[in-house]
Length: 282
Image 1 (cartoon, rainbow, N blue to C red):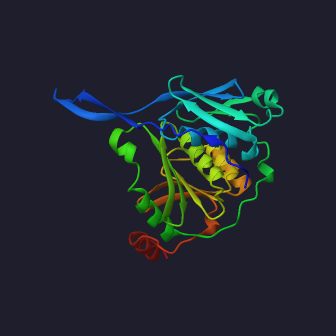
Image 2 (cartoon, helix red, strand yellow):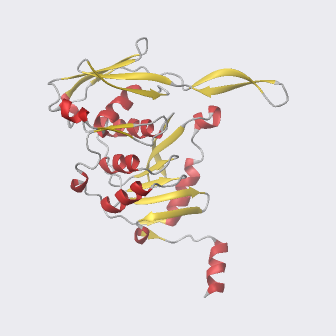
Image 3 (cartoon, rainbow, N blue to C red):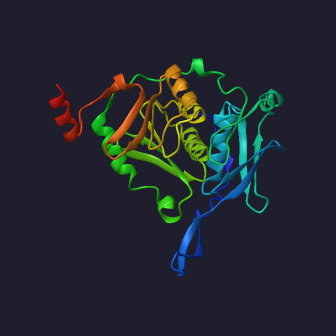
């Protein structure tokens, strides 16, 4: 494994305590989600400003660099230093990034909450990604959804955030919430990269839409299954088919829709009402 970079540890609280007035004119104490600007400087060059909760800024920056394919090897990064007084993350490398101007010349504003940004050709390198062909049980999906309901702590407290989770079976290895799903997936990517965690036996869950950006990032992390309680976009669907990502949307309770990879699902827990309907139809 590559040598780890030096990282600061500057995570902040995810929610602010505030008072609001309800429909009865009563003052109610509550919380709102934090939203902070964090500008990334790569070898003193300003690259992008991310809007984030700020709970895991170093992992967010590390994962963002990885998913943008600006840095190929962790050993290339010397340090990531976050300073909230200047709202900046200073990334220093051991040697300057090759072809940085060319990589930054192409910019795509994505459909991420608050508008995510992808640098370079989004489709570049997708044909080189090889995901494992796995079989997934319907019962495991249901059990995992039940486990995920116990999370979303910031959402339950303050709302206004998305959550992402890295899962192995029904075990949730890492759960991250942020103001945009693209930040949450990048923070998990940073965590996986830092700890050399492989994605082949993992499931990735998001509360957000299954867009092209989300499918590409999950595929780059080597994860073969993408699960969401939300819907999918056409480009997300087409890329999932091209790469071989199992794409499951509208997953809530006992309901889900498989848009790609249905032949890899073992239907071992069809709800009783549906079983009855199927028998009558036959």
